[in-house]
Length: 292
Image (cartoon, rainbow, N blue to C red; front, side, top):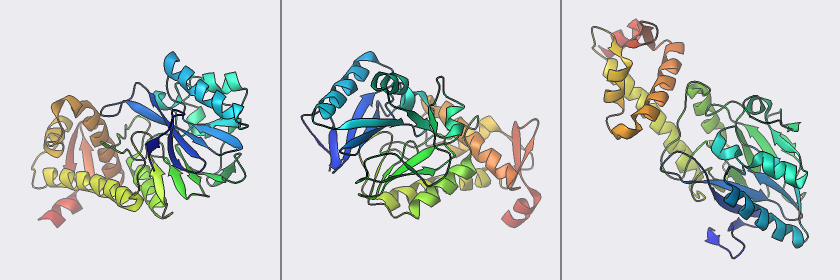
């Protein structure tokens, strides 16, 4: 499923090629998966590298595929993060093809989008033998899309999951409740395999999605345990040390972003109360009573 070919891509299934491009992404990842979908008509998903050498490498691959009679039809974006869009404008303009994304994604881009993918479940232009459906999966980023390739029953999942590490939900533009809901909606599709934004394809799709849901639920359980029995509210920093004690210190900034996303979710749900301008936290009274 993941053998590298002489063409410079990774073959996964008929009509699906992965080109890992070096990007300024977060560790442990070093590359972002650019996915080429189709045979007669190709759509390019997430040409994310801002580096000229990587852009030229992708150009050469597409030149070769076009020389074999294929046509590049569009550039599609899962979301706006720089490691997924760094080469998108270059590719769309140089090939003269439309750049497509969800409007909420487009509002965050540093360049103009050509055509909106506004509806959840919208079928996007691609090879007719490889129908492609765009699924709205917010949470990690506004207007995040997963592309469901129906012929092979494959999910091109962007940053919903990763083959290694976890996914940061930054509360500035992310939403933890929406992210968990999006994971559950993907699980219901029963896909054959999944291509994450970073790392190799994933065969155990359902196990991976359920693992991500369980991981987030366990973090929330740790927050509740850390707050249980406290007579005074706890600072966000102290919560970070308790809830993410298993995370190396050099990653605490990103862990702290996900912690805050969890705290926003829990306060909206009424499970946690925020004090001192959202700097200290305690369990809601009904939670404290239940814990006792």
